[in-house]
Image (spheres, rainbow, N blue to C red):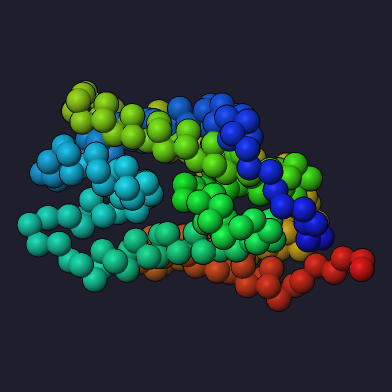
Amino acid sequence: MDPQHAPSLTFADCRAGFWRMMPISSFVFIFGLALGLAARETGLAEPEIIVMSAVVFAGTAQFAALDLWGAQVPLVPLLATTLAINGRMLLMGATLYPWLRLLPPGRRYAAVVMLSDANWAMNLNDLQQGRNNLGILVGGGFALWTTWQAGTIVGLLLGAGIPEPATFGLDMVMGCFMLTMVLVGKRNLRRAVTWVAAGLTAYGAWRWLPPNTHVILGALAGGLVGALWLEHTPS
């Protein structure tokens, strides 16, 4: 059912969202450490790394860009890779549209500036359960952004003393968090089929297609199921 009232977006909402997102943000800090180390090894200057991390704020895309970085940067593959990875943002924004469309354009677009996987999943779950505010999207996004920048800077300072996050299983934290958001959301056959289609497509793309294509193809497969299998609500 479409919302009837614009979601709340007050300073109190954002502050609550900031502190609510802080536990998961601590793991984002760890990946910021790894990014700072990886970026330093490419030969980028420290100010360049910090500005990139602050302005881009897309961890997976940033790591992919570093893999392609060198004396001669392959611009077209770089653009294609980042588009494939971040193309999911189009679909994530579309899921929030029923609520965002009720806001004035300025507030609407400002609310999604720090859109990321974790704050999107948590906020969408809140909205679907009737908690009609965008505090976790904006405040939670700022928490993620802050810890990402802090981790990047500390990574630059500590250098090679940082272990690989995967060594401790920390690379699985975000995946487990997203799975939790799926399990606590509304459950029905349509949603189950959507997630299965997205998961199988992403797995197949990860096994047999070029790197990072699984992100956008999995999202498109799930979105296609949702678009073709519409929910019917009583008028």
